[in-house]
Amino acid sequence: MNTFERQKDILSIIEKLDISPTLFKNATEKYKALAKYLNDNGLEADMYPQGSFAIGTVVRPNVKNPDANYDLDFICQVRGTRDDYSPSKLRELIEEKLSLSDLYGGKLEIYPECFTIEYAAINGVGFSIDIVPAAEENAENKKRLIEKCNYPELIEDSISIPKQNSEKNYCWLTNNPKGFRTWFDSINAPFIEASKNDFRNRFFTKQQNYIRFSRRNPK
Image 1 (cartoon, rainbow, N blue to C red):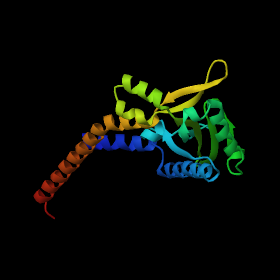
Image 2: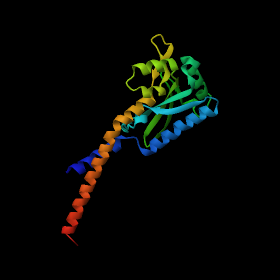
Image 3: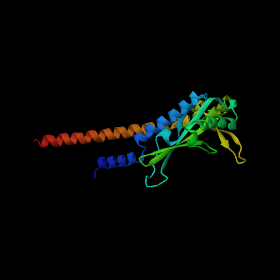
Image 4: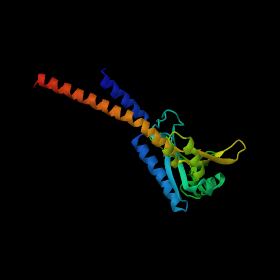
């Protein structure tokens, strides 16, 4: 097996580990529908992916496992900053809207870190959406972060999420999934481009070899 064929086999394995296009489309439609429901019912909020779904590193579960499930994380960022809410109040606002829904209320599970909605399986693999409440970080904390951060240009996207402490009370925790995604994409871009160039070079080399062989061996 030559290097080109080995690379094809590796890419094939990676594709099998990745989330399927059907499930990706389904998950995208589901979280956008959730965002629409919240906004249509009086809660101005922006929902967007974080974690593996955001940066394209979702790994397909083993379908032989009866508990196989995609666990996809999303931020539900309401309008305003953390100064406009208490952590507990923010959770209550989102929980109330979801609980009142005929579509989502029966699927809703409440956890200290998030709200989870379970969906039906597709091709033997189910998936759930974890909804993390959030509000924009306030100006004072952003200023403090900019002074300490190596990437101050990313701080504007900072958010605050409710975090349960050891006493079971909720406090604010600063997070920045959008900033992390921007940073990840920037450091990953050269590797993606190098991989594309390498693939093109190998493909053209293979084509050139085929042309030379065809010329030497006319029909």
